[in-house]
Image (cartoon, rainbow, N blue to C red):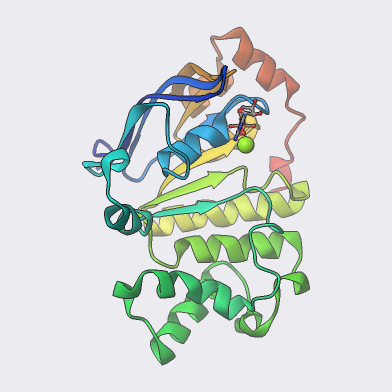
Length: 261
Ligand SMILES: Nc1ncnc2c1ncn2[C@@H]1O[C@H](COP(=O)(O)OP(=O)(O)O)[C@@H](O)[C@H]1O
Ligand SMILES: [Mg+2]
């Protein structure tokens, strides 16, 4: 089923005033595939992710999700589309409301997407099962975000992103703010979850070794443009573009050997 395209972006462009921060980016993600998006800081990766989810409006280009034109979607259509797309951001601290208990943080998507109609014992069961999947105890539900470490908070963010069983998961540098060993555990969790649920992922990172480890294909961005795209292992082992070669050289030895699978 790897040939069925779930997401297709064509000619995505974003301008802020005189600055074109993303220029003519086209990419496709097949169902069940993990596409890596790499590039140095400021190359436009987050802007691409936000346009794909229509969190910001592209200046030009198109986004089609499972045959639906995302940019032409009405407010109500967009709300329904968003339910099928999850996102995890880089900063595990900023993403969680400090005044809400984990139970309420996780239950929030069910309040927004009322068609899920999950309440009471069934909601509790879903939340408990999800916490278990991300490796957190049930007791987490009555706690507040500040009671968790960065890695645990990112697990809560992943749980929240997955609770509505999205088809596409966008991960914007999900481990960049974490210690290397903690990050490696979160990466392995993502890998397990992806395998178990057949998730389709857009995985943003500036680490080529990480992308090689996790992704099927990779797209390399430089100053708003795509400069190279192909199989993750092929590109990481035999980069064609000087920029990609520099990116690989600039990445410190990632501690993937420390990963315990
Ligand atoms: N709202 C904005 N207004 C103006 N410039 C922006 C805005 N958002 C991002 N940029 C600029 O766009 C470029 C790409 O940013 P971003 O997509 O966040 O890069 P990355 O995620 O690869 O680090 C950067 O130069 C950034 O300063
Ligand atoms: Mg970014």
